[in-house]
Length: 299
Image (cartoon, helix red, strand yellow):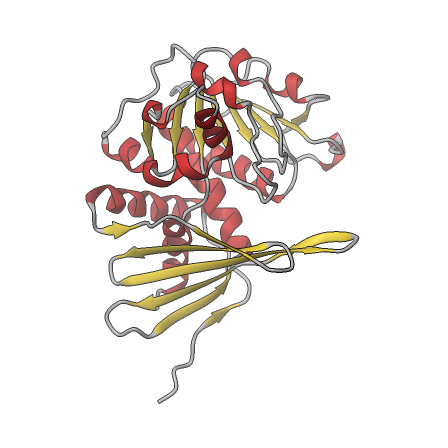
């Protein structure tokens, strides 16, 4: 008998609280050992580009996101993503989802969970470096976990008329981060965009992954002067490029990672001391994709 897979071509509007709660639960289950998060895999393509797969298991659901990166001659690369959810009880597919928007939401929400655990309770000034879809999602999720009173954004082509409501446009990245309590890096840069070591002690900086080869938004040598956290300890130090480069050059060791999100949410690692700037690095995890896809698969 054939099985008809529910296909979600466009992500329905989910509330920020729904997404944050789903990810918080997923990472807590990961800490408890009732969820599984293997490393992502990268499959190089013969003609250039690659396909990344992100897998995870939560409860009775297995999920895999397949994300091709397909370079094109004389135009931007094609990047797509699809998430498939299967029942681990019946083996039947539960959902196939166009994961483009899902990826934006889960990435921003993951950064916000880290901000909630690592930023000072009275954090008031937020700086966002980048002005695209990911930057605007990060702004939205960060505002859901802290009552920021000063909001700044920097993008190379961003003008005030195009900025989100209530956000001041900075002329440079340095101007945006000056005096900020939280800095969200949301660029596609393959090299550092700010000097994280120049920030005040206790300032939280988050950074995400991009498709640029060996991309890193802060300098690898900066890690030695920061309190460093990641989304998941077993995978982030092997995939986050500034961590890989710093380790290769003997400037930092994965043993110096202070904690990850499962530990931060369950008291398994120390919180930020306030003595140095704080750096949180996420690489994107299948458990994040599955946590949100499960919301879509609910009856």
